[in-house]
Length: 316
Image: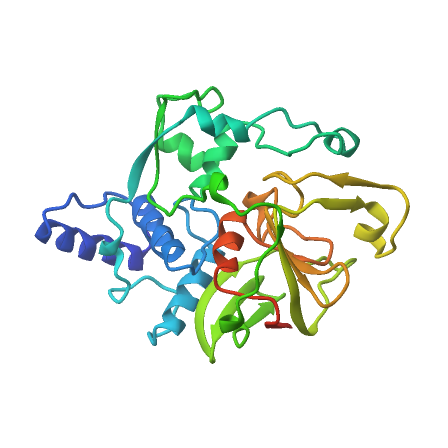
């Protein structure tokens, strides 16, 4: 059943779309997808784009409204310029060079540690990260494709977002500081599983996160970003992850989109704690970490362009 406020938006959007000589959106999923794309474009991240909405779409909308001086209801209304997202979907042709980032991914850490790179395990995973979306949405948008057998030359329908271009990531190593951003602040809400970036008190971006668990909580307090590294290795030490105790039994996992800390690591001035990417973006905000703050790779690489070492981070 279409919720009343969504019905009103559908009606209003259809009227505006007709005036603009554009085809109106025909169902709630398309309107919700358009809203999620809009919020994603503004870097008020709704999490994975799935056309279903939910908790993080509502929180992203609420943050966008606060940032723009609108009534902060978390509900879609006429103040949200959805018409700026057109078309809602676009097409992507799979390229031979995309396959450089796809390969066999072993399960065991002992086998992963022997590799030089931890790739996507299939083209579908490559696409869901590139276009910030849920695999089920891609399957619905491409009913004539077998999504597990995609090949170069196949044309797929995807959400119209800024693509996460893994081929354009900076080389592995430290990221240069940006002194002009050190006055900015990050606030982490563990309760709401949300990261907010502010400049002079003005909210400019927000993204969902996965914080720590009850066993390995994300530490509350006032911290700073000590440094940022692109395409990091990860020291998999079960003692550190589960008990905060460093051991001699560990695996050094190479970089890649399936590295446990994703493609970017922001170290706080507390050992072992950071804001970082992830190899499981579909679970952001819906699971627990080992004390750090996990962010989808597509969000963390855009966030990195707006932050710097030396910034204050408040964890509540």
